[in-house]
Amino acid sequence: MTEISQSPPRSGPLRALPLLAILAVALLGAFTLRDMLSFEALAAHRDMLLAFRDAHYLATLLAFLAVYVAIVAFSLPGATVATLTGGFLFATFPGALFNVIAATTGATLIFLAARRGAGERLAARMDAADGRVKRIKEGIDANQWEMLFLIRLVPAVPFFVANLVPALVGVPLCRFVVTTFLGIVPGALVYTSVGAGLGEVFARGESPDLGVIFEPRILLPILGLCALAALPIGLRALRGRKAF
Image (cartoon, rainbow, N blue to C red; front, side):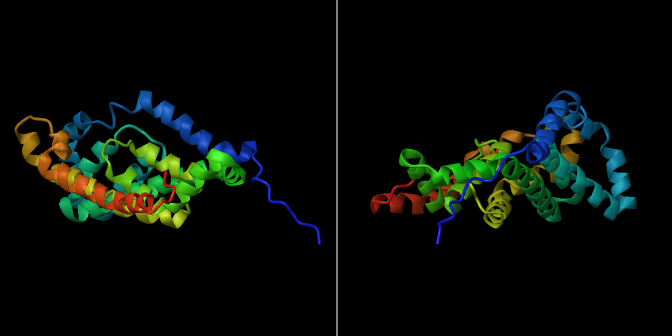
């Protein structure tokens, strides 16, 4: 019986179209939507938004979710403003839940586009490689859960980077969705609670303190979660396993 060798998935223009479309919209949005998806725009339209929410709660929720998903999926400017808006319109709860659902959905869409466009082929090449590349891929596979939680919890990691990198190293979809949903909860809670207090901030004519996440009372618990997520990687390294 002849042995059939597995080859990396074939690449083609059609497979790359979703990712190329996302990149094109992201570039266009960076220049055209920055003013529309800003804190100033939210402040200017706050009364209209609240009136529409009071009259059409479900329609407001669906529109908010759609816009938030589009912002994340196309890596448009305004993700932080969208999170604040979730708190402003829907309070800390259920606003935080709405924010996490929308952000996870948008992240999943860009993950799928990146995996289809380049991720499957790159991951297959890494699996078939030898030497250092193979060891790196084995280290990634051995620590996927921990690494995925880490890149979500660390505030310094850009959100779009945390969406693209897993797609390029062969992370399973279910694992990506679970770690994204749970990993962004701490940050979402912080910014949603800031958004819930925007009414008073607007009344004083001030801007929200977006650096609150770096205050010790907020940052230290998040860093504690990061240390907890990294602990299994360190233990494996101490036991002689190669971890990336």
